[in-house]
Image 1 (tube, rainbow, N blue to C red):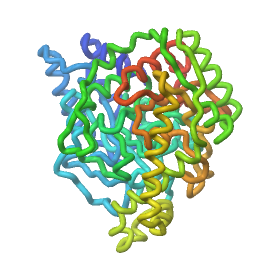
Image 2 (image 1 turned 120 degrees about the vertical axis):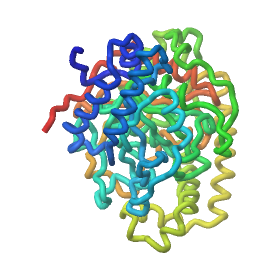
Image 3 (image 1 turned 90 degrees about the vertical axis):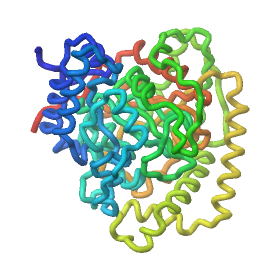
Length: 467
């Protein structure tokens, strides 16, 4: 068999596996070799499970050879963010507090990926409990950006972003409470989807803030995200927020046809409320021209200032997170990393009235957004202020440092996709955010896929060498 390329999309690998032109065993072995060669600098994995992965790959190869092909995830190597429970494999939340925790049951999302034939290579680095990072005082170092390892990946799905961008895995899981899928996707040049609240089960996923938490896929392309979403989406009675809705064929909806689509642009978010870098502004404007060229019509959307959404979401997030971690913070304070515990201390000063007022404001903002976007199929805004900063220059209170472009869509619970829209200073990726109506992931994915196929950004990959 010819050597396997360093970079394959999930869809490309699936096509070759289905045609029996690519061995799942050789594909998994090639990714494990790549992890061994590169991850000492990227730190994207907390642990790998090579024996279990190769055993699963041999089983996948035997099933496919016997004519039992489960679908496009069959035999595909992925990684799991270390807040997703994995039976018999440690799930620590990247925290000393849970360093010895080994679940006895898989998270629903993990079980669904396994049933579709995906093969986990191990557990991926995250910020501590999906909130505190990048931290340098934990048992494991923070993940690094493959485009330049001196730079940040964003968080908290940092290891998933680094591993996918470096070609160590073909896709992975992320969670998103205020932007933890879309932020890392933006800074590492990936596609990352936060689906509608309730579409993917969170059972078996360590919580941060339960009214804001989402689970979603991260991969190199929108098409790859669609393939992962197909396996992940669906009702789960063990998640009380899970919603029973029809699940379409997401890949079949990637027609490339955007004619007649109506797109609203929240321009004041990135031009006034949190001004993006000049290269990001240029890239967003160029992307809007691409959408026009694909047949979409564009209009402007005006909302309350971005900081209203960000501040509202931040208060809700830290209040709900404190409720999760209060007992351990009171008895094991110094077992947490400095960044996590110092951010959480803010929540101890909040009152019940503060939380209730934030929830009231949330309802107002949801009503405002719904009214302002009536008549639009999609909304577009920035995903990040600019290229990735240096990892040693991220402020301790970064979530409150500048208003987040991603938090509005955790507050509203709407599906939001980040895609790469160019490269800025230091040849680092830039990101665009595409937002849809509730449970209309199909239109969001169609737009992201059409944009990617109309531009050249997906052809660029980090240049990495062993050592």
